[in-house]
Length: 413
Image (cartoon, rainbow, N blue to C red):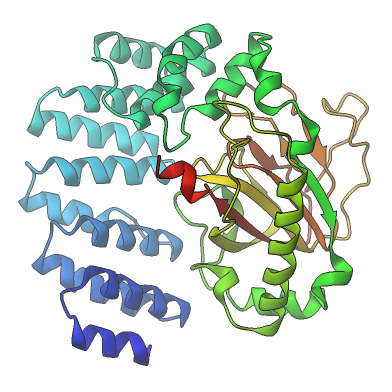
């Protein structure tokens, strides 16, 4: 805090410093102060979008309405497109689709019937199961204007059982998909169509690695104690997959405590070995590049799930490789059969990691793999691969996760 306060005194108009100060306040369990400071700045500068976005996330994690301050700004600046867009996207992140529909209607009344508002109206209706409204909005909407809107459209097509149309929408554009938003939806579409490209994309078993590292990372209980101190929020982040738990803030593996630094060293050594075992490069593949260095951590965090907690199926589209490292697990987890992908043999796989499953969009499509969590186990897999977890009945499920960034040589081309 002292360092951030000094930085603010030297650069009082630097937005990144002000946001860093807010994050430090939250980490010091002074979240209300962080909110008040950001609100004061936004009162003077209501068009600071990064400030609004950060404040929304802080308010959401502390159990407050994440869009209250955006509503205040819009009360006097109702013609600003960027504020309307941020409010709607924040409500999407909070899964408040009914409120998002109201926000879209208000934006239309002030801004007119813009193409992106039709796309957002269709997305909200589709996520709520109002298929007729979604279809009507999409029929009248222009072609999506952003990758985000194309991905929303593909979600709807998969949800209503039209994978061929989803593939037709995305295939011509996937080569320009620098943020890798399209590959996860193409993987579902190709599997549903029994297209051989699904196997080309994710069928090689060596894309996924399981590594039991308990003997290398040291005292798992000391690590667990370190991690628990970082879970200061009341709720999960708005834009993350956590349900029934919390997630740490900041880049976890940059912390300087001995348990975390030992973990970082072991994890990165294991990533390097995993990359060496990956299949040869495939032209156009989102994971199997020809150049695979440097291996940089793009982000890292801890997730603490409690009774009935789980991760919804999701992807990390802007990463290269993603992970799950298990620190502490409920004692009640069943030792089910990992080959029982459909649960027909009675296995519930409580707390297990699922790969290749997207129950929200295609609930009848079985996962490609189920992985049993064990303390000290690291799982590595492509960031574009769907993954989630099954709920568990009681206890604590404490993990570390990180993404390896796309190799710089590839992203700069």
